[in-house]
Amino acid sequence: MAKESGLGWTTCSVDDAAGTLRDIKNDVTNLQFATPRAVQDVTGIDKSAMERLLLLADFSITLNTVFNDAANRTHDVFKTVPSTSVARTTTLAVSGQTLTNEVLFTDYPLTRSDSGELTAAVPGVLADGTVPTWT
View 1 (cartoon, rainbow, N blue to C red):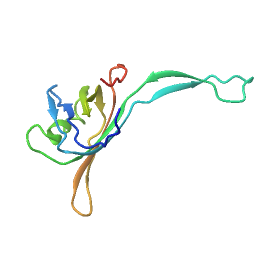
View 2: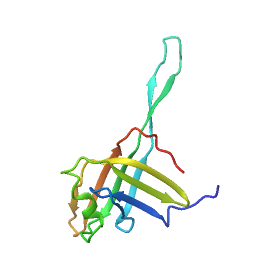
View 3: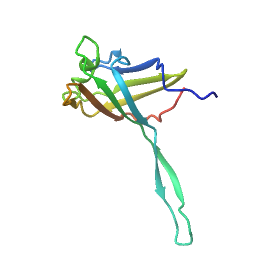
View 4: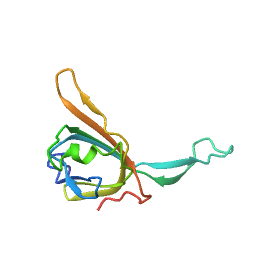
């Protein structure tokens, strides 16, 4: 594998509330996502170091976006987060590697900075119990 930058994402898509996948990569300025595993501490009193078991897998994401209220763009996709309870297919792809998960977005917090930017940092978590897997 070659070392690469994070430039040139090919896919950053999220379902709208109706289940239609929308390409929002042009509105996403940066993102953070994680695929952690829970652990259980099973250290006995006979040990001098930690002993753990791997447990459930998880996925979380925060999409940092600029406000765009054009049809099928970020505001259209996320404005229903407060009023709907639907899992949304979220697909990320870079350098031929794709990560797709069913995500519950939990907030649509808009921020207007003192210099005038209108942005959002939209958090989401794994919805359906499917282990996050890169393909």
